[in-house]
Length: 382
Image (cartoon, rainbow, N blue to C red; front, side, top):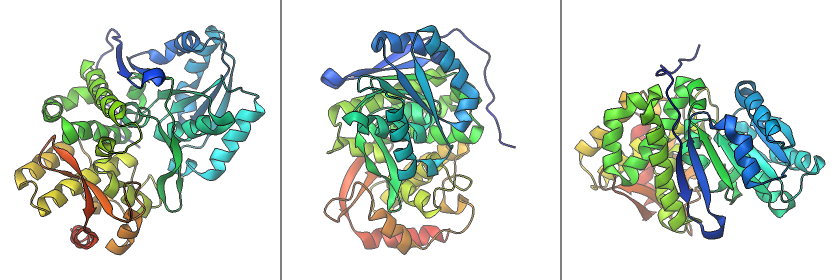
């Protein structure tokens, strides 16, 4: 039986809005408790008269679909529901093809919208469908996991996985609106909330030491669902919005958002995306730990920085070592083959996000593969 969150008493809702400034394609991220109940009103105001295709997974449908449908119906919005299996394996060609066909069969038009109700898997898949059908429909995100609310729903990255690696097929396609209902997070299993929290901690580690220090003091309240949770989500979204506005297509600075992801994606691929063994946020946590340890190996930071990162991730209950992943992992050579397919690889040269201190991450191109391989061989033995 999965552990559950220890939730603080209900409180008065407070709405926060973060703007993603992309000129004519700018959009708002609304953050607060109870937003799913207001979704119909907000979507009708933004896209009056639109028909909607709700893409959700079987788990989320049982928890939140009825609330969303009731809100849409009250606002007079016609909608169809397209349900997919839960889990990373859903981000595949077959499911992408099926959803494209179903949206077309429902006779939705280009001015209509695809609504993603779910976590990162649903958001990535539904967004790629929205980007593709009729060469681009409207797209709305209603993220239901902490990870999706602070990361994957913001910034327009959509896509599916390939046998060559994660998220290698897709498009940059911005939503028209993001509704981050933080009350929905009360239903998350503790493991999933922890996994999402890894992305929250990432924002502090990559460029905001005061935020990381705030998290060290307030993480328990974030987990409990007090005002600190909304604050953490809003600050994370603002951090990502600022980066996306400056570098939408990841030509430079946006790559910083991948702190921990090169190692983490390789580990996810190595376990064939078996979520019983490893979910994305856990891979990111281990990846961030590896990135800081590798930075220490290169002489960029001292052991005090590594120890600080390790303590916080351990305090919240996240895995930090490859040995924390159940089962056997492949050898370093196999992991290197996966890393070689990473999206940040440029003209065959490896690119990593490294650290000069908490809140001082940077992009390092042309990292020597043999140095990485030796490092991974040592870490696999720990």
